[in-house]
Image 1 (cartoon, each protein chain N blue to C red):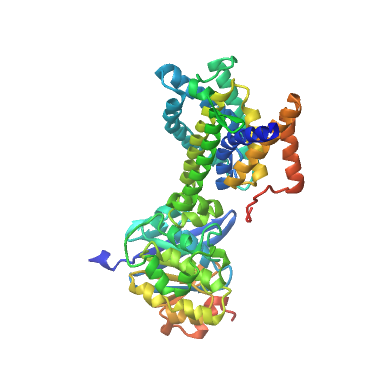
Image 2: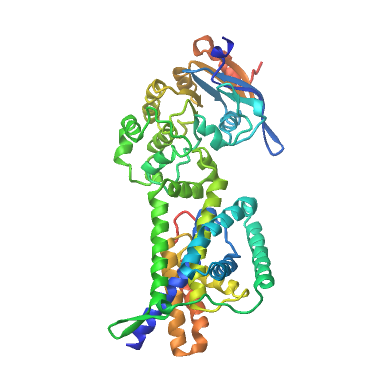
Length: 240
Length: 287
């Protein structure tokens, strides 16, 4: 019975280094099935490092990251992706040599799962991409590029979607457009971890929020249980 | 009329240089690796074909066909277990390692096959020619050129029409993000070098059918291949064919004026193109 309630994905005492610099100091987070979790925090809090560690770009102790009951912390990114953890990387990172459609198609390279998401359903989610399908990915506006990056990750029909700063550098109206896709993504069966600098956006989309500061989780809980003051202290450090 | 004939012969010779260069261009385009042993690998391929011809008693074409999968595996393993370890931000390690490989290969070939020059056995077909108007075209140069065009068409199809090709281009753009797509960059690089070795085998076949070879001639083939790649623009396959043609035409024109000028004319053409277009004729936007 116990494992039925086990989280879909969790980190346990996750630490990460860049050379001599330690970026994460024992981070524990959990993502349950069908849940959306937001991770907030100031620049340099370790949010992107956490995402890269879960996705396997940064390798860890095997037990530091678990997915679906398996320890995956030591696996490389391509193997983690094949099990159903896809990432929308910070800065979008489209492939400049590939067209919009090729950028979407490459998303299925390591995982062909035959779920809800196909070229057609991704184009239905973001209709503008159907018009721009033969353009180079990098010829699009920032918001459209972000849609390609999300669509590319969806193409593998992931069970967990990691979204790293998907609103960074975009106009508020575009951000709203992009977040409109979240219900459809959840309906197709993905659980989400969203890294977000925009606190109100994070509060609106998430079932639970983790706030990070200097490589540690300083606060966590459902949005309606956290006061602005708690968040302010967790975000910047208690000043008094 | 003699000039038209000379230029056509030069274009056909360019096909051989394009074959020398395609594998180099492919590997450079995908992983920014300059393989200084490329010429010696072509010579090694020629010896492998010769060995198969001698042992099995088959024609050089069939021998090359048999050699291709062997060479693919060699290339795959070389990349996976040696060259991948040299890739990184520093461009020096791959240069040093492939330079060392070049010397080791030359000496290994010398030890094994001696310094005697060899040639793949030719039959009537390979010395035949066809008459087109007043111009006589050798069947062998035509076959060489046709093979070069075929190789480049096939590589372009692979790059732009297949999932593997998409993975090649994505990995070339950004290996880290490619790994998020489920791609193993180390295996993609190994596959690319394997394919380059198959092209090396085709180049080796025509090298051995058209002229004598011995263990020492690799570096000169590398120079022609290099010039073709650079004239064409690094990483552009059609550019590589055009680069080969320019070197070939320059060499035959030089030789027509004075036989001593053949090789020199190729180098001069290379320098002239670089003076006008320092990044080659079809440079890639994102290099």
